[in-house]
Length: 106
Image 1 (tube, rainbow, N blue to C red):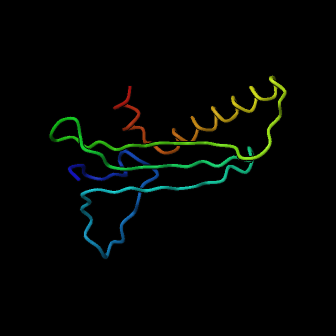
Image 2: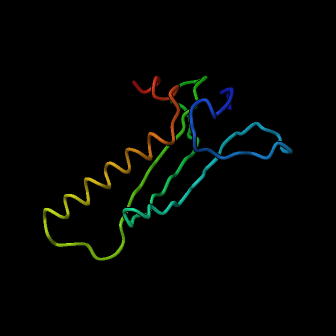
C-alpha cells in the first residue's frame, strides 16, 4: 500500500507476520466481538477499495452492532436500547481509529 504504516491510521487492523513481505495489495478482514454488557454482537469489516484518485488509499471501516433475540415491545425501553447501541457503535468506531485519522476526517 502507498501508506507508510497502517498503524498511523487504524488501531484495529490485520497484522502480517514479520517473516512475510509487508506490502499489501489488498485485504478484507472481519471481526465478530461480543459486547457482553449489552448482549449484542459487534461486527467490524475492513477492506481496501479502489481509491477515488491516484496516490490515495481508500479503506472501508464498517461497523455493525446487532441484538438477536427477544426485545421489549415497550417503546421507551426500545428507544433506550437503541440509544445504548448507538453509543456503543460510536465508541467502537473511535476505538478503531487513530488521532491522525480523526484529523483527516475533520
